[in-house]
Amino acid sequence: MNTNPHASDSTPSGSQQITLRSPAELADALPFMLGFHPTDSVVLVGLHGERGRFGGRVRLGIPKTPAEWPSTAEHLAECLVEGCGRGGSRPESIVVFLCQDPEPGETARQVVERLRPFAHRLRTACGELDIPVGEALCISDGLYFSYCCPDARCCPPDGTPLALTGTSVMAAAAAYAGIQVRGTLREMQARLKPREAVGGLPGGGALGGSAPSADEEQRQALNAAAARLVPKLLEDRTGGKKEVRETTNALVRQLLRRFGAPIEDGTAEAAEPVCPPPQARTTTVRLAGETLAGRTWARGAAELDAADDALITCDEAAELILGLQDRETRDQAAEWMEGPEGAAAVRLWRALSRRCVAPYSEHAAAPLTLAGWTAWSTGDEPAARVALGLALEADPEYVFARLLHQACNEGLDPESLRSCLREERQARTTAETPGREGGGSAGEGAGTTHGRTGEARPRTRPRPRPRAVGKTRRTAGAPPARLPAKPLKGGAVRRGRRPATRSGR
Image (cartoon, rainbow, N blue to C red; front, side, top):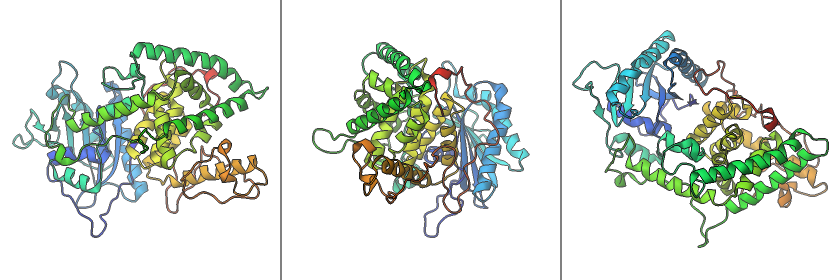
């Protein structure tokens, strides 16, 4: 679940205000609030003050089974209200969005009627918390429908077309503020899943060549790596775990140099595709609810992902995926989190996530969590929430992903965790290079990075290793990162655990 209860509840003096006056403008504003077009999602947005300023928001995939709708509605309402309360104030009202495209042979009107009981449950759950639902919209197949407005003149039963992409006041303000809307949620998730798990989505998780042969080759490499590495990770009598850690860390550094290498003309490689400017997006082509801008972004992302997949072999990917199941190795990998190295790291973790083919889907929790952490650390919160959400789908009990997801959703500053990881690296480097001034400048074997800001000062004696998992430092006045008081119901069901493939969280 994605939440952000710490959205600003006040307008700074001198900043521009945007007034949304109709359900159409509310529907158009949703992708700009989330950073992507939600698909198969329920979104709740809190409104604050007399003018109804946007505040906290929560997002969750729509449960497939209607029996899960009541508990999901209660949980979502509680999460939004409690999160906003920790941020300073309860919302005055709530706007509900249900976003789902029709199934084959289904119409948008049928989607609206099928989800009507869920919308009613959401309105009831919010009302039980003494917060009314001001508007409930269903967005499907390029149309929006209102569950609250009975006036057919403004909200006809057959739906109202959404505004053309890039033509609204909200789109113009977002472009001026530098806010980019990427593709759909499904397209963002496809960048983190194997092709066999993506289905027919074009360009999703390509490994090069035909998908069946590439997936089978990766599966065989994972089987061989598991047979070789798992006994060493579980049986540490002969120092096998230390050997795996050293080998994995060395391979991470080698691949980060490969992913961060300049292209032939000497310029830095483009990190991410961007949507075209508004003037290039005034003409919209709709296909299953997708816009031309989203499809352009998806094609650019697929091309970059295919290039990244070609940079790593199946054996290297298998070696890293198995090695990252060790908690200490994973924590050290999280130290590659800033600047150009952070950009290379998030591409590497995404590539590894796409290699976690069945039956190794649960192993994706480690690279997905690293991808989410690095994206959050480098300022890409939408991508971070998507990656961390998928990590929890792969392993709902993965502690590192749960803590990061909660901290990101509560609006905490990632600098607190970055500082902890810097000190951890500094202490380890000092211990590995005794008697050397400025241990953080040691050679490659210490895992140093360049261009990192705010390095901790060298210490004459290493401090005890801070825990990067389970506790983070908080900035002044920031609320503690707490796990949800109530487990998410209706989420992914955890499949059988394989104890022999995990050595820690």
